[in-house]
Length: 156
Image (cartoon, rainbow, N blue to C red; front, side, top):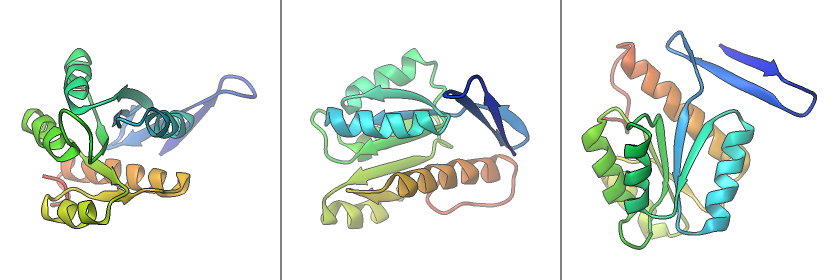
């Protein structure tokens, strides 16, 4: 169930029902390219998500901890200085094994490596619709696991 609350003609709040609970999912967006990070954050915010951002993996871990680990989805670039997306995803899933992860990359070799590392990957450049389709799909799978409907590929 999706509830749209129109605050005025320009601003609406989208609240999604995941597993019967009305929530505003929190997405942590991590990319060392400020323009990409901001674009992804704006798309997700426009779709009603609460978005936190970080410029690298180390910063992302600090942001996650500052938010009490209450992250519903990690969207991260693969190649970043200090800590790559695979390592970041592994670190955050060690704290929250049910955390869904979506990696982004513009490099073909990262896409084949992502499949070996159990994380779905979104190829850059991508459309707004493609990003949102992946995000909604991963959050829906997270709920399916939480309510015991079986295993979900790519989420551990």
